[in-house]
Length: 344
Ligand code: NCD
Ligand code: ZN
Image 1: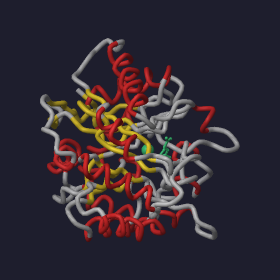
Image 2 (image 1 turned 30 degrees about the horizontal axis):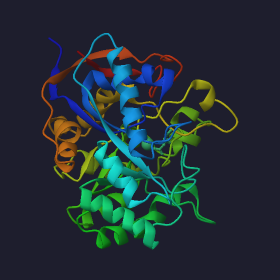
Image 3 (image 1 turned 180 degrees about the horizontal axis):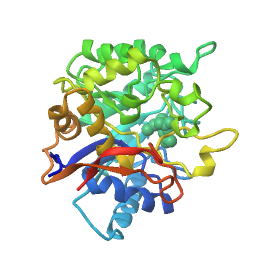
């Protein structure tokens, strides 16, 4: 008999579901094992900025879901993008339309952040953050800053003082530092109060910068924030597999068609949805912490978002398989590699 683990259905607190045909390609993977997914708002050509955008995007996702053959229960958790011109009124409307969180992309740090936030400290944006706090919405932050003479690998650390200021100024605003990639970020989240948590991706638990540029340039490992050093990865594994509820899954599954990755200025983002629980099981098993996986993928995130735990379970069976080289138009994480665990 093959070894088997059973987990409560997951919450993936950071998903790029995209729109149009890509949405239809990628949604079925997440919906296979997760009952909820945070839908990131950095869509194009239409970004999710207002209550009407939230309603439109949720309908798009629901329509794509209804077209799927095998349907498991799945609910997209909606977000709006916070820009310099996002007002408290827009927050109220987005909240009314069902957005549970607002997402900040600082200007220029990642895919589709060309109209990202310039200034975290001005009075107008503080009023917007306060409106989110009052409405009980979460603030999700891409925690990097693009500054002069700052390397891409240092952008996360450069952001951390801003996180401390925000956490102090808005003690009742739940803040999630998304896809942390450094030991310094993990330690900051540990130090800060109960209102601050972090998501961790599976690729940051697997990769270092060597896997992006150390053995030939590997565009399918290119993502923001960039994978970092060995000590950073060790720390991420330590906190993800610990009992600390401040660290939970947000996969940042970020599909881009193959030709947008394999070109002169390749897009950043890794498509992990097709292999997510399978690779996580490998990482947790290697750390001797398979028994902590369920907390990381299905409990701590729900608790921080004040959501009930999901019903239903998924099972993983220890049985080798090879990840396809391409799925639809996208090259998935670990393409062509042999994995140890399969979704039952
Ligand atoms: C994401 C994307 O492709 O939308 N890319 C990435 O490298 N992670 C955006 C993001 O979350 O930064
Ligand atoms: Zn993302």
